[in-house]
Image (tube, rainbow, N blue to C red):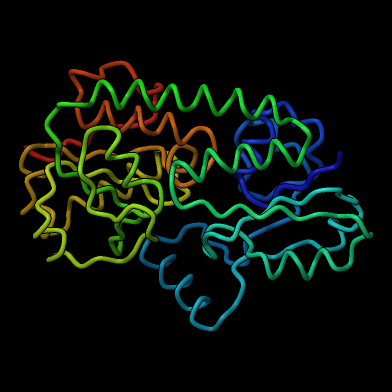
Length: 305
């Protein structure tokens, strides 16, 4: 089978299920596992964000969104040459990946028989369900079932250990400037890890005002800007703690502000999301979950002199 993945999460799923050799095309953002970066790039961003600060990126994305413009470009000629049997896309977020309408338009030029599988998860259960759907589509149903069982076991291990621990108010930020709360599966991740998140489970992330955050009075702030690795998140978190409003939060006063590697463990809906739960558990309850987070996946900021 020849597979083109138009979303990084699907690329991770495909490789984890052992179908990496069948992947013939990916997006510019498909970097996990690293082998995916050797594949032809079918999708590239329309906006060049190099050198821009977070507020400028948010402004550019918002302007494109208001004008109804796509944020990504599909190389339709390359897609045609790759002759995929299956294209995996997502219908979750226009900011994260190319949307189904554009995919269907591109697919209309391909040979008959090319199929499109669209992923649209909103919860941890949906993420696991998509692993099964991908496995079914590529003829690896058994491998997908085994993977989902392992992932469920990871979740249960954290959930059982967190049961009975104090629930700490946690503000997971999917963007720092302007501030956005978490959405979709991330509030559920926080809950499993022993916290109470500001965001709503199963709902999109949204822009929030400082006064809303202060009313929530977060004990822990986690900076995980969508699509950012740890160094980029740490940079934005450093700029965040210079803002006046954050100094009024218990998280700032108690020196509980963190940056996380969001791109792989939180922004995407692949198997690594389950390790994101362990990262959150170690942040929220460090004594009980010490050593559970993968190395170099989060960092604590020194906010108080």
